[in-house]
Image (tube, rainbow over all chains, first blue to last red; front, side, top):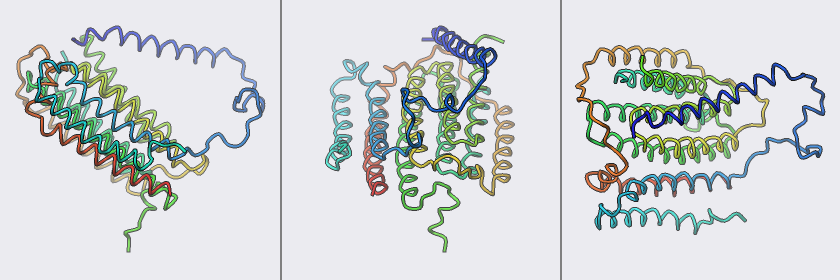
Length: 119
Length: 102
Length: 165
């Protein structure tokens, strides 16, 4: 592929950014600005909001995110092999198995340590 | 066609901005973000040199992929460290973390 | 100026703008969003370099995973808004001088240098060539990368566990 093949994506980005910019600008220019305390309240399905919206997240989210990021990178390493694995042959297969094997150690570690459980 | 110098200058600009972020910010997460930007600017350099100087080899792209793996590992461990410091010291400002100061 | 050059200037400008926002914005959340802009523009730069796989990886790993992890980190550590602390530390003028000086030196050196440019060849380095390289000459680094990911995983989990207790 050459960069010219990406021209539609560029056009799409420009159109998307342009549309949203126009929409925001128009509503800021034309819309009436009368703010009352009720209007400024965070919208919570019609209920009166309770407490602060900026609660601290549980660290469990973070542990899951760490696992996600590392297995994401693992998938990146798989991809060049996966599109071509017929031509790459047995040696590449062994290589991938070793690669996955090493990462499985980490996976089982996370499993045994309860990082995958939510409680 | 874009001259090679454009890519190199862009990467130098991003690197220096990232360096400023690392040196001047107080928040540890902001410093980590600066480091990620510096890694990214190095990646641009690798890809650009591969395209313009070592055409026909994929060494530059392979290096970039390894670099991205390192950056991901760095982000994971770095943020875990920052969180651990935050839990014990209740701050993410690098100026207030002075446990090693006598 | 050709279209690709115009696109490069657009993307480069977005990347620099995002980077500047990242280091200067007061609200850390906003500065992370500016970082995402910069990282996304760099994916566009990879497309211009005819390294499509890198562009995809950039979006998947940096924009999709690392930026998300950093946003999580910000949400986990942010003091409830209001306690505005200084963005810069005491040595920021020195940091600015060092960065600007390095940029000046680099810019002069990069523009003056005579790079041994290869003749323009249609881009190689499709994903298949990348696979061949990773399974051939770069087989050992490939396996070491998995060890690196393993160590990072175990280390991050141990440290995060410490943070939990």
